Length: 230
Image (tube, rainbow, N blue to C red; front, top):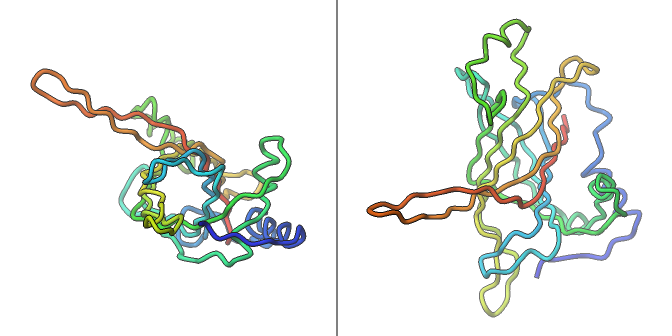
């Protein structure tokens, strides 16, 4: 089973503050480079395990790392470089009051786990649903004002339970998110990434006379949020 512990409300409040509160001591500019470490919170709900079960309620996964920009691309793009850190026992069950308040609900206890990435890509974009050769417009500004960050993350299989049957696991997932990306005017250009929906692409093969066509549909599996740490 997923390990859990009994914590006092004070412990949970303290942990929620450390995992979810904005770091008030941050002084450097927030960027999509190795100069800024981000904490990504992935709240997954309804994902099917390798044994065909559904995750028991919302499960919170935490990733920390940097957005690394590759040189020579326009729009800017690159990959997310994770920092591997195991959660201690006190962090494995906390009260996520921040997420609950966004939904207008009371705080609720949720399991917190870490995910390992097998790969990732990100790319700044104008309107991904209406691609145009519109970069000449942004040339009127000091920097291109791309309003979206398109994020793709491939996760590794994660063991959830161990039992006589060999246990259950969360299969490798290919996650997609279209994230609002803005530069804050109040903090001299800090990058701000908003909470976004997380989707997986479901493959459906359609057989036609003499051919098979692969069709992809996106299925919502949760939400992702971003917190700059440094």
